Image 1 (cartoon, rainbow, N blue to C red):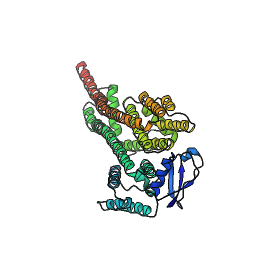
Image 2 (image 1 turned 135 degrees about the vertical axis):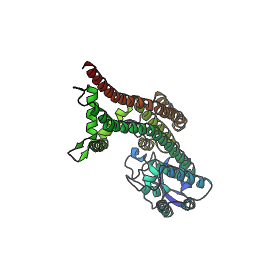
Image 3 (image 1 turned 90 degrees about the horizontal axis):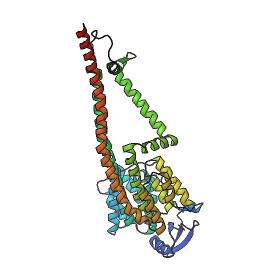
Length: 420
C-alpha cells in the first residue's frame, strides 16, 4: 500500500489516502462521492490553493515553450497515444514506441524529455508542461483530468478529436480568406501597373491638345505620377507606398497588442456584415465543443471556462467568458451573462440553461456542438461565396474609373478638335 496526497473540489486542504496505486486511489475517492483535482504520491508537492475558487483550476501552462510539432502533428500524436493506451500498452512503453516512428530530432528530444519525467514519478501532464507551446493548455488540462479520473486513454481520444476539429476549422477559415486575398492582390497590382506605365503614355499623346483635363483624368494622372515618380531623387513611388503600408501594419499590430486596442478592434470586427458573422460562429462552435469536452472529462466548470476562454480568438467574447466565470464563482448561472452579451445565439443560451438545471451540461453541449459546427461550415461557405463578387465589384469600379478617366480625356480632345 502507498500513501497519496489529494485535494478535491470541495476540500482545498490536502488530505491523505492509502491505496495500491494512483488509479485505485482515484476510484476510492470517486466511490466516496468526491471529485479529486490532484492525486500525487507522498513526497510529490501538491499545489497550494488559497481559495475554493482557485482550487477549481487544474493547471496553467507556461507562457512560452519551444514548439516541436505542428498542430496537425500534435493531433496525430495524441490520437496515436490514445490508441496505444487503449490497446493496453503501459504509458512509458507507448511513448518509447512512438519515439521510433520517424520523428524529427526536435520531436525525439521532446519525447525523451517527457519519458524521463514520467519515469522519475511525474504525471504525464506535468511532463508535458515544459512543452506547452506544442501541446497547448487545453490538451495539458485534459491529460491532467484523464490521469486523475483513471481514464487517460478515453480522454486522450477526446483531446485528439477536439484538436482535429479545430485544425479542420482553421483550414476552412484560411481557405476562405486566401482565395479572395489573392484576387484582390493581383487586381491591385494590375491597376497600379496600368496607371503607372500605360496611362501616362496615353496622356502624353494628348499633351497640348486639351487645356484642362477632367477631374477623373487628373486623379488617375496624379496617382500614376505618385507611383512612377522618384521621391527625393532616390526612392520610387511604389517603394514609398510599400514603406508606408509596412509602417501602417506595424503600427496597427502594436496597437492591437494592447488590451484596449484589441478589444476595440475585435468588437468592430464582430459588427462587420460577413466577417462578423463568421467570427461569431467560429467562436461559438469552439466554445461549445471545448466546454463540453472539458466538463465531460471531469474538469471543474471554473477551470473549463478559463481554458475555453483562450480558444475563442476574440477579446470581446473572451470578456463575456470572464463575466461568466465571475458569476459562477459567485454561485450564479452561466446562461445569464451569455444572454446579456448578445454575442451568443439564443439556442445556445437555452441549451446551457437547461444543461445547468438538469445537471447534464456536458452531454447537451456535446450534442449542440455538432449543430454549431455545421452552422460554422455554412458561414464559411457563405463568406467564400459572397466575398469574391463583392471584391470583384469594388475592383471593377476602380478599373472603370481608370477607363472613364481616359475616355473623358479623349472625348474632350475630340470636342476641342471639332470646335476648332
